[in-house]
Length: 310
Image (cartoon, rainbow, N blue to C red; front, side, top):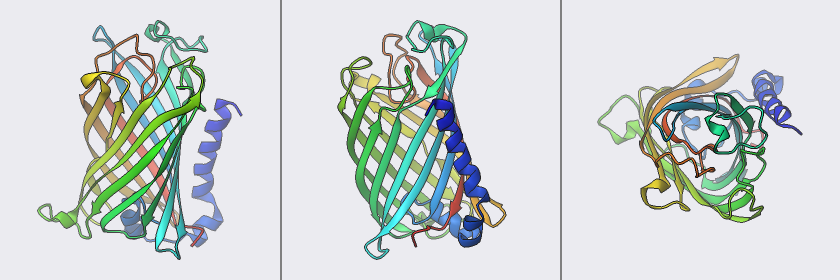
């Protein structure tokens, strides 16, 4: 299956989820309940997250280029242990539009300084967390995470990568009181990968991590304001060049398509800590370019439905 077909499958899945009579009829869930559960990374509802990240990249000479990442991230928990726990499965499919030579099938450091852009599928991430089934208070989950080398030439690290994942958070049970911990959601999801196989044509080895942290104030039963950035760490690099640390500010709300609640959000992020732009460092953890990220604008929509296995 080529890249365009993969992207079409992802988009079709979102459309089917929103229009399927079975989901609309059987997956009834109130907007307030959907908002509460969708703020929980290990809840028992299904979400079909479609996200777009538009990133302003800085070159070595101080000029900027733009990268776009479109991702489809279905979250599909399965109840285990008589529903007392959830096995939360998340697949991340990425499609990139990078600055580079659109006529080149392999993106090289020199090609990246052309005005044209190159597009292709990135590597696929699969995460599975076992977690107690609860919607507020302290929550946690642990499990494996895998990166599969499914990307196109110029968009893959060409390595099978595995490692552990862990999530810890505290979710508030109330809203509207900025001085109360019960009106805040705070936590993180950390993933670490080491390469276990694959080719050496791109990189000899990989050792990298991603830590998504979130700090959100609950304005009301359905709305949040705060940030959910991803810290990226490339342990193969030296010193502070290992880290990409963004901070942000955004809004998360809800709307409905027929009877189906849909989570949505938008967030502007600034990279407070980032490596120097290095045209010789071809591949990294966030889009495979030698630039360094400056700003990122993220938007997402996520239809929410009850778990078909419950």
